[in-house]
Image 1 (cartoon, rainbow, N blue to C red):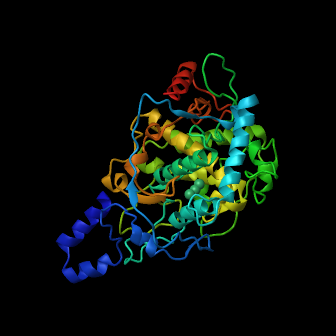
Image 2: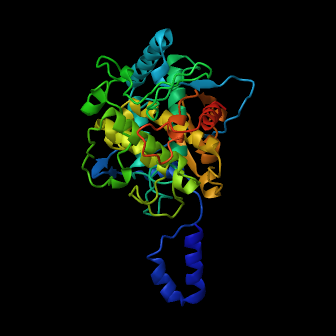
Image 3: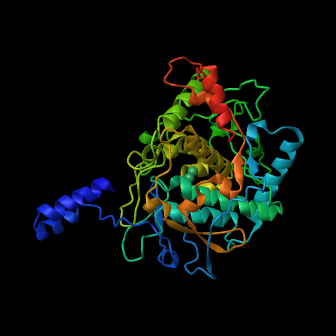
Length: 426
Ligand code: C2O
């Protein structure tokens, strides 16, 4: 914002009006106001496109009923739901969770298409926000997108929050949680003294691979179906052109090489991102032209490992217009949320933007009772206020990676390792 304002000020003080007018045609006219989604935004929704593929996903043009402000209240006396690492669920807990998850998606898939909680409509709301069908304040021909800019993390948190609520409602279980696919954990650590999950989680979760179940999706690439192939987080999203249409190539690394590359990628994405602009993403305000290039405005939290995991799974996960139709989407994003939370805990200036154009941006999204809610970015910044927390896992395996060329990522001193591990549980 400062850069652009500075530039506009130079324009207005040094140049004659006519030259200013001409020049302003070539300068993004940011109003320095937050993006606000209204009933009008829904009314003016039109066809979008992403990766050259059209997106026909407008929600109903007329929002029925009231729009209710969402403001979570943290109640410290109420226990938080613990989102756990999928790879550490065992025995009865694993059986119960798998059954609930699969029943939840079966129920969601069975809802009629006009129910905003249906599996189809969950995909459509993400598509409408994420492929350009919504335009800014109706008259301007500016699209908006919750990808590739600073809205990536908070918008997806709202989406996952209400998605989790919908599953809870369908299952009649208010304690059901969307656990996380802990794909960043590649190192199993034997630990008896600390609570949490210290088992590597970089394989595709098996509960998504049963073709007879609602969590299955047949169009994933072969990679997801090879039980001993670790996910490749190191695909460089800056090489990915969303308009290019060509799926990326993933080389076949050995397990050891892959573990090393994944550690390096996580370190680059999270530890090396020392400020909001690099981790969260660049500003996107009312009046801004949407940038469809991950190298320009997307934060590292979006590029790595998030886009790499979407690409690695492939199939419906390639495109923003279809990715939430693969149920693994939600467990992937639960981990992205966890990594955001962890990034805050690393401290040293790693903090969310304080810019009101971010904090006061407003989005509309249906809740678990089919009521339209108005959610501001500032309402979703602390996962605790939404009732969830995360199980402690082996983040030290990559936090301590440093830029070591050793193939063993865990090269932290034991003090540093235990510091990060215990900070993870806060
Ligand atoms: Cu809206 Cu993982 O994407």
